[in-house]
Image (cartoon, rainbow, N blue to C red; front, side, top):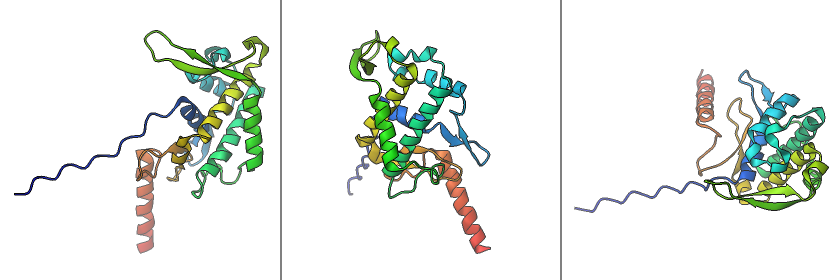
Length: 220
């Protein structure tokens, strides 16, 4: 009697994404489907940006004092400008695939997107600073070289977001970046396994239903 076949090894899951990757993906995800066939923007008001920054305080420079940050119109415009540059570069990164449907007709030119991101990152010179909270793992953050009071907090925020995007775009996780093309989805995501097509299972379900409807209409 032949010996039973050994179970095939399942592919290893990718290592957890670095903080810069998660922060950059979360910034782009502030453009999302609104649940009614349109696109919503979580950064449509200063209050929206304030809430987003405070929710991501752990990933932002300590000098920003993110948990006490309050955005104004100027800060909102600057962050939205950085986000537009990041989404333009995401669209380039997923080629030859199509970009997110939310970006298809309003992408910044490549040169403009690169310049905007590089200039934002350079606005606040930083050095890496190690901290090691009690009971937690050590963390390295980029902190401004000049005293925090000498730098506009909006500049600190934009520089941190731009540097995170630069780190992600020049790193290995960029190769896993995809745009989700399920009906009504406008998200970018990291592909975790070779057969993954959608950002979330619910998007896969919507895509399969849409394909079934298309086939049914074709037979009708």
